[in-house]
Image (cartoon, rainbow over all chains, first blue to last red; front, side, top):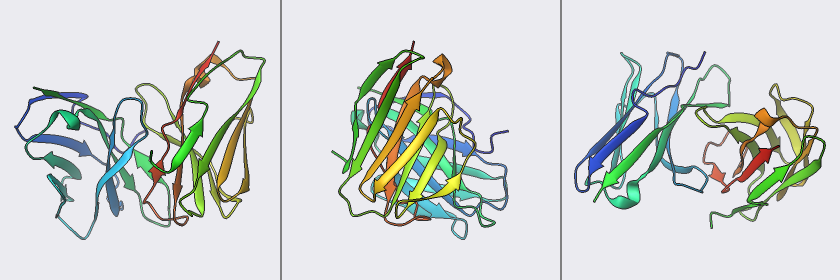
Amino acid sequence: GESVGLHLPTLSVQEGDNSIINCAYSNSASDYFIWYKQESGKGPQFIIDIRSNMDKRQGQRVTVLLNKTVKHLSLQIAATQPGDSAVYFCAENRGAGSYQLTFGKGTKLSVIP
Amino acid sequence: ETGVTQTPRHLVMGMTNKKSLKCEQHLGHNAMYWYKQSAKKPLELMFVYSLEERVENNSVPSRFSPECPNSSHLFLHLHTLQPEDSALYLCASSQEYRDYGYTFGSGTRLTVV
């Protein structure tokens, strides 16, 4: 079965509000996680990553939180803008010598102007 | 433009046709990848090349045949496809194999009729 998944398939937020997109994983050996953004008609674009020895990492308007206890990953987008409308999905590397990424299905974020 | 160019952007082919997808990158990357993105399914890794050598062997039907003539070009040769092969085929590259800083192309939307 799929290890990486998402709690919600769609998310609608008001412009200017903060967005939180969640991801669950089941493999406790996973040691690296990435969030991607995929706009309509485009390929996925790297947003931010985090290693398992960290709990939080911040970028420009984005923060990734990792809770290893409950195997949960979240992406927070501050002051969501219309340009943030896209599908977001997480990916994990399962460690143990594996160099492949396992991707989640994605959450579609819609920003309401 | 992400630096990874895929052609064609759209392709409709019959089940008895033979076609090829092309990917080109001018980023100086040494690793290239083919991914399949089906509706409502996560991204699936199909093939990985590092320095023109295939380095991963995922379970992919033989009707998909990759070719990597040099580190800048990657092809996916298609023959005798099935309707369930209809999907978005994404090419990606990274500086080195085992480097997750992927740059994705915009994909080829394939429809098998």
